[in-house]
Image (cartoon, rainbow over all chains, first blue to last red; front, top):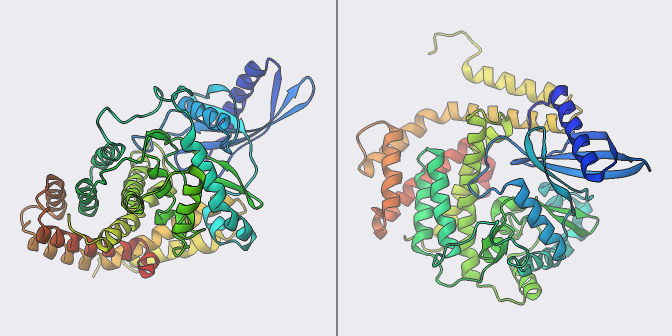
Length: 349
Length: 123
């Protein structure tokens, strides 16, 4: 995302990575390759190749590192993301293994993890013939991974204190809506369409809870790695929280994550029912279709507000970026989709 | 007519967009840099469409805001008033909600016609 990375910055980062890795391994570590990877609109991802001496042992790592500016009010600090990743790894979720401990690299919070091979780019995963077999296998693989996430004993893993939690007597959905209102206010620009959608969501909140689990918070095509025909890893845990598992189930169905393959409503790779049934089989829990439809509308509002906030990171000067700037005008797509879905459901507040 | 000579504002934007697409993006070997150049070209296309549509967009929104009862202040102030009244529940009655909803659909369609007309065509 960084528009240009001066060689000075690169040297400072390299020196500090070598210092940290040498401390952690108790040996001499030399970085042989260091470059920023594409993607990652909210934090940096770096490829780090290093040699550990003596022994010439290779370390193939990815470093996740803070960017300027907070993405949304729900973004976790890197150290917490590190802990969640550890719990997911221990729980058998396909994730990159987190290594060492949370770090500070050249003044920004960071952590290191295993480098997992695979394709994450959404528009390739939904359209490239090379991934046809993967697309057939993904509903079940994604369902198994998501069910494993929702089964994690988050209390035993020590995540209850680290992660955002619904307050006593407050539903996870009500908390989500309250946060969306605050985030929209922070943008300081009137959005009558989003206000209407939020008003509809407030007045039509489904009564029943689907339970309380660890929620990934950004489980979708674009945030998973696919290698060959298989799901290799679930990435981007910075929105993890304790809440309603249906939020994850519905988020995969939000139109933006179909990457243009509109007809396949589950992430551009499967029919919605195929996905929901796969998740029901994997989790042993039946999913209320009405709640998913409701949470899909909430998901569109969430990404509409998220895109506005991303643009503010550019506008505030914290993170100058043409890509972030352009997201301010992407928000209308989710406004359009939210209104379309509400109209299809009768449209009354 | 503008006091300025040609190229017009629209023609300047189109020229920069053609340069970015044809030179900067096409001849850049760095995938990330090429990706950002294409985003920049798309941003210029948005600016060109906004320039063409702005007078009609403003006229239509003004009519809608008047129809909803907002006559004082500039468009931004009236939009703000509408947004806060929707949140406060002033549009909960079915006929009021339908009216504000129709306004929102019209404005969002106009925003998309500038931001991403292909998305709008997908329905």
